[in-house]
Image (cartoon, rainbow, N blue to C red; front, side, top):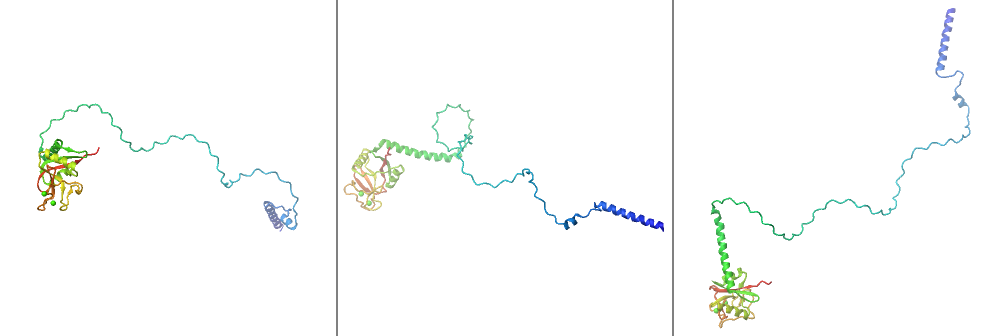
Length: 277
Ligand SMILES: [Ca+2]
Ligand SMILES: [Ca+2]
């Protein structure tokens, strides 16, 4: 019986010891009472205003402000230094041709050429043939020029030349025209006298002159289509046109005119206007 009481007391003691240790671990004081309970049951009035505190340290640097309004135009600055040289410009237009230079020195003679071969002239025959034709034409022209120089007559404005080749009126017109002239047109007495003298001195009896009524019967015109207005020198009884076939005009050595058939062939006289200097 006693031993069981002792054991009971011993257990109670251990429980009490554990309780005390629990309280101490929670930081509680057995004797202390909760403050909340005191504040909740008692009204506490605020104390008096304290003294001003010490000035604090400067704050951090603030953010940048907004951009201000555009300021007034500044004063014109001084002239700056000369800039660096620019790049080379584009090429200009080609200039005028320069004066002809002096003649150069004679060059060194060339090397002697190789010996030629026998020519196959077959392919050149055509060219040679054309050359022959050209030479023939040139001879004809030269003969014409020689005759002109030998027997020419002239005034201040024109040359006159009797072509001593028998041709029809139309052939005569063409012959004069392709040489730059016209069948001669005696438009006044002076020219008519000059031509007549020329015909007579040449020992001729008649030549074609540039007068006809081919366009309209009876209305004679010069070969430049101008009508006979101030001058004509018809033989007595002419123009006769007995069969209606005499539409071209010849000048006799007397200087008189006669209408005759155009297809007849005879010598003729051309006129050439002098070039004005
Ligand atoms: Ca007639
Ligand atoms: Ca007649």
